[in-house]
Length: 324
Image (tube, rainbow, N blue to C red):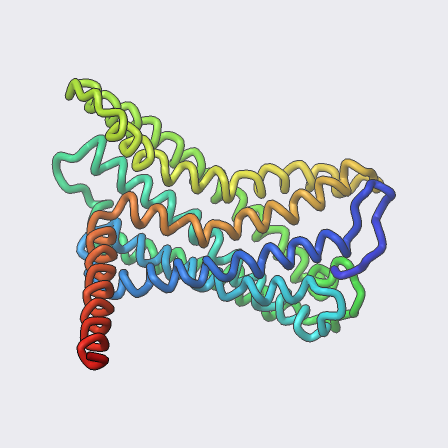
């Protein structure tokens, strides 16, 4: 994983790639921690009064857990990283990351479906908009990913780690662990593409409904039109930017995996590594969804900012009076 020797003379090498990726992960950790800490603090002051709020709070939890894996993943890529830490990353940190990533995918799909019913079919309340059902679905999704992704990986990644191994995580898996890994990957990929279709259908319908309503209103407000576009497509933009590149590159790479070494295969492998980092940027982009799509979140955030400004102003005034 941290080997510095090139696979082929293709102008790429593991050492440079891992140093760049490690730096990007450390840089991502700082804003991710700040944004998700604020989001979690705001959500703690909001009641779960709607299905959207239930999904939003679960998304915040997934993002916080994913954020915690960033420094471990970054450190594991550094040259000279202790093999014990790299082994821990393979056994625990990476499975937690992928669990949270696919949980985020599921939640973005559920948020899209929730938006569809509220925008396209606003009349009447459907069973899928029940608070109890939304909590049950969220809890079931967490249980599924924990029992299918995290626990089996911890148990079956039980081989003695060999320092300097480029494919350390796979070599640490038992034969059963490798077979299960392939099945889990296939299931997760199927979930991703099913959710992709769901999001696509929902937002085509939402876009038609919103823009038709906007057109019927006869408004020529360009700024308002831009706000509508952002609010309609923010979920799609986050989903496409963060998750689609990784899954497309993974398909291309898996098709070439059994082939002989080639520059194309090497470049795809490096591109897949960077697409994982792109998937991790989801932790910084999800707060856009909270802000643009959730009015209670926006109001509570602004209220907290105003309270903070007022407190600082009062403190400054008191200090001035004490100085005088």
